[in-house]
Image (tube, rainbow over all chains, first blue to last red; front, top):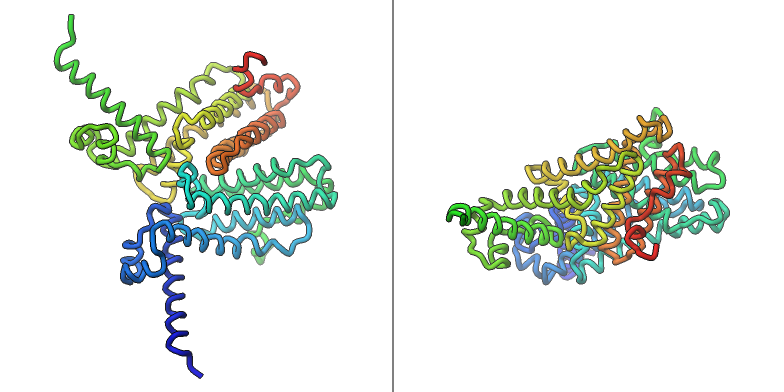
Length: 225
Length: 225
């Protein structure tokens, strides 16, 4: 049985939409969400402006769809690989280490998509800023949940300030991303990993047994390790 | 003696140039350096485009001049008030605390001028990125010098990693700025101050005598304190 012409048209539309969004997230990570325009995407992808317009009726819709697409990639690369880890402190480490890899490996060519978009829109109220604030809050909550799980399991000091720990971990991640992009200095990722490991060991009631589990992802991949 | 027509013309030109740059740094902090255009500044300030063009021959020159103007304001607000402090660790604190006040008080309406501009240009090689990287390196060096002075004076543990300390302090400052702008959450400044104070006390050989000197600027200004 062959696909009906309708099925084929839907599939082709999906492919076009995905191609537009892949290009849009790349452009936004390099030049900002304001750098997105329907005309530019049409030129870059050699499709008609009305073809792009059929998928995204306005620049704002395009910006919001690019944020959704970036969230999906972020979930795939950073969030999901850590989700099956039962220990809260190890999960926090895996999330942070996955984030450093996501920035270092330039999953988006301009570094973290959200870091750039937030700096661009943080002082501009509206739907785009709201979508970015929601994505940022979910990331905070995910790390906060890991810290709280660790505290409830008795793996951290009883008076752990989970919000303070999460603030510090995210600060190190974003500083590594920004420093590496601006100064092309790869040591920033090592500094962030060192700082985060030290914070997690400080918070732990059993740092000696935790320490060997906080291995950088790079080391795990190295066949000589 | 009255001013000559030439003097008067020079003074008027200086005033116009200053007015253009004040507006340019405000716009850039809110909407990015790409938001600057000679036409827009002319409209906003009700002067002719050729009037703006006479001072800044291109958008890039205007962006570079805006960066210089922001550096001058930053020096005045953050750097100079701390320079006479002889103790390196206290100076580091004063620089960090001054930075938090500079962000919190919205010296630039969109928060730290450099935070936004760096995120915007970090992946775009050229003169603008170079100027931002230089400003960022000078700020790193200033904090690093304070940490090294403290180490040489025997005020810190002998094996202090000054670069790591500076990386962490700057990470906390920028995270507070970004979190406050995106989520309108003033606690981020307290979290950053808490984290920085803790780091400086950890590094100190005499934390008990250092602690009372690491007072937030807000407290110093409070007449009831």
